[in-house]
Image (cartoon, rainbow, N blue to C red; front, side):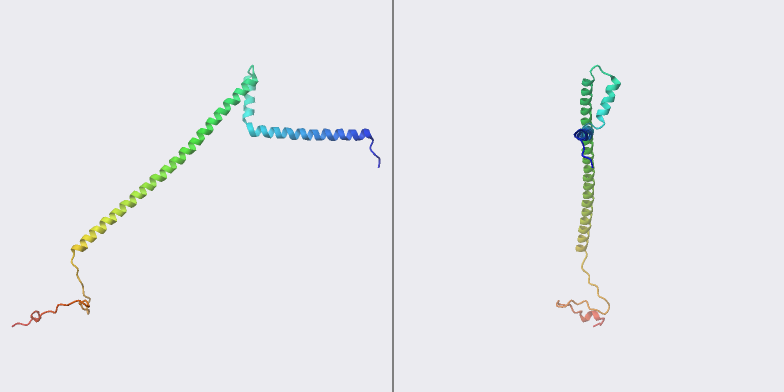
Length: 159
């Protein structure tokens, strides 16, 4: 195996450095591109297209104003969107509260109706005398209570 000459080694180092430099440069460009996409998104492309279309005398100032205006509009849209979300949540909560109130009113009405019914039945039962019914073959005598004995006059005998 032949030993590389010093000139060849230098060329190899230059080539390696050049390749590494290109890869490093490509990596740096990719990182910059990723950063720009993340920060500007589609906005920068729109702004540059607008500058190309309008061709202002000071394109840098025009671009700066365009980007500033774009940010203000975007922030206003975001605030509007957040307000809409909040209003919808408040509306939904209001609907739930209204439904719950209606259910509670309905339940209160039913309880009032039951209470009135119970009061009417209690009054009716208090007015109606207690009646004991005897089943055939049973006595209507209550144990431990003095009983009235029917008199012999009611047996149908005449004097």
